[in-house]
Image (cartoon, rainbow, N blue to C red):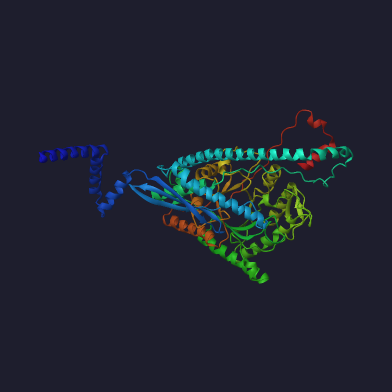
Length: 616
C-alpha cells in the first residue's frame, strides 16, 4: 500500500512538473539554445547558457529604498540614497547616490543670525527628505522597474503633489489658529486702552501730518516673481530620480551616460560628444572683497575641437599661472580658495580679471579668442538692489557690508561699489565690455529676467558673437516644461542644475524644448557638490554643449573632470567619439513693435515722438 501511494504521488508530481515547465516554455527554450550552442561552439559552455537564460529572466524591480544623512563638500548635511532591487530572485544593492545640496539664496557675508536660520532650515529639509524616502517613496515605487524612468518620475511627482496639499492645509490651519489667538489678545488690549484713546482723540485733529521719508527713487523696476514655496523635504524627489536612473544603468549593464542617452533618444546612439568644460578660475561678485560686483565668476572655455585631455592640461596651467601672480603680489593669503575652488582676489573692475586671464592664456602659448575663450557668470539678480541700504549708524546691517557704499538706489544694478546702473545703461555696459574683449563667448544672467526689454536689446547687440545664457532667468524644469516660450524673452543658452525638484524626466524634456528654440545646453554643478559623478555622465548623455564644474581643484570638482576623461578615452577606444561642431551664435532680435492704432501717430507731437525714439 505504501509503495502504491508513493508511486502515485511521484506520478502526480511529474505531471505537475510537466505542466509547470510547459507553461513557462522551458523545454522549447532549452531545445533552441542547445541547437544554437552546437553551431556556435562557444569555449565557455555554461557562460553561454548563463547569458542566454539571463535574457529570459524577469526585469529587475525596486525592492527597497534606504536613505540616510551624508555631507557635501561644504560639510553641510545632504541625502545619501540607496536603491535595492530584486534581480534574478536575489535582493541586491543596485546603486548608492549622494545628492548635491541646493545653493543658498544668502550671500557669504550675511549676518551670523541669518546663516544660523538658514542652516536650521537646511537640516529640517534634509531630515524631512530622509523620512519621505524611507517611508512614502519607498512604498510608492516598490516593485517598479527602475529602467522605466518616466513612470518612476510620474509616480514620485504625483506623491509630491499629494504631500504638498497636506502640508499646505496644515500650515493654513496653524496660521488660522495663530490669527485667532492674536485677535483675541488684541481685543483685550483694545478694551484696556479705549479710555486713554478717547481722551487723546480731541487733540488728534491738530496733529501734524506724517513726515515724508525722503526723495522718491528715480529708478522704477519690476519686482521679482513670488518665490515658489516648496514642500519641506522636496530634495528627496530629485535624489530618488537620479538614484533610480543610476540603478537602471546597473541592471542594464551599460554606462550611465548610455542609459541617459537611451532615455532621450529611445536607443543608445552610435556616437557621443564630450561637453566642453566651463571652468572657474576667479570668483568675485557681491560677497567677495573689492568693489567689483557685476562678475561673480571668471571662467575659461577651450576651443570646440580640443580634446578634454589636452584642454585640462592648459586649464591647470592657466589656474597655476593666476595663482602665482596673486602670490607674487599679496603672499599666501591671496592663493586661498572658496567652496568651489576658485581664487577670490580684491578686484575693483572687471577688466582686471579679464586682462589676467588673457595674460595666462597667452603664457601657455595660446591665443585668447581662438584657442581658449572666456565666460562670465554675472548673477544679475545678486547685484540688483531691491532695497536701499540705510545710512551708516542707522542700522546694524551695514556691518555686514564692509567698504560698501551706503547711498545705493533701489531698483538699480550696482556693477561696482558706488556705481549703479538702470537696465538700459547695463545694456551699454555689457556691449562695450564685450566689444573690448572679443574673447568672451558666454555671459550668464547679465540681468534679471524681469528686464525683458533690456534683455532683448542686449541680445540684439551681442548674441551674434556671444552666448546669452539664462540660469536664474528661467523657472525650474518642472515648471519650464509647461511654460510657453515667447518672443519677448529669449536666450542662446540655458543652464540646468540637478537639485530640488528637478527630476531626470523633467530635465530631458526641457533639454529637447530649449534645443528646439536654438539654445545651447549647459549642465551646471551646485555649490555644495559631492563626489558622485552623475553630473558628468548626464552631461554626455543629454549631449550638453558645456559642463560647468567650478574650479579645476578640490576633489568634488576634479572627480567630474576625471570621469569625463575616462568617458572620452572609452569612446575613443570604441570609435564612438563624435567631435563637437564649431561654436554657433544665432542672432536674437527683439520682437517687432506693435503697430500703432489708426490716428494714434497723428496725435503725437513732434517733441513726444523724439522722446519715444530715444527710449526705443
